[in-house]
Amino acid sequence: MNSNITVRIYFEHGRRVKGLTFRQKLFHSGFSYYMLKKAKLAEIKQAICFNISAGYLSTHKNIQWGHSEVTPIRHPQCIELTDSEEKIYGFLKEYEEQLKDTEILIVKNEVNLFIYN
Image 1 (cartoon, rainbow, N blue to C red):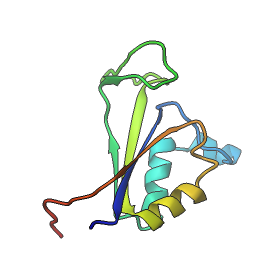
Image 2 (tube, rainbow, N blue to C red):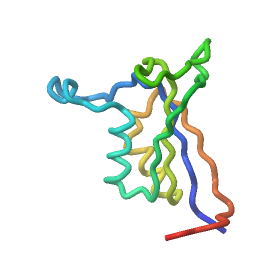
Image 3 (cartoon, rainbow, N blue to C red):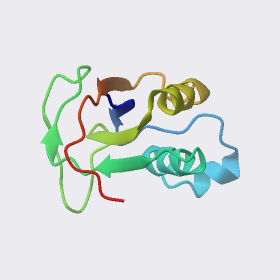
């Protein structure tokens, strides 16, 4: 039996990181980059930021369409994290304040067909 789980964190492109100083806000790269950096520091096995061309979140009334030059603020984004249950739940607990108002989907990985290291 595999103890890995995958968590997908859905949020709007314009989502801001909470608790930054004025200077950090000026030179900040965005919520997805922030969460990827924190996942790397937490030594999460795998972290992926998906480029979504179109879609909507449960809070949206309309479909959000992506554009190659300008991404709308409400455009959905997704970060996927895969690791052991303990690490993932620890990560979610540690960044609980940042993850408020995001949509989180947790999937238990029962079988790994191929594992390449």
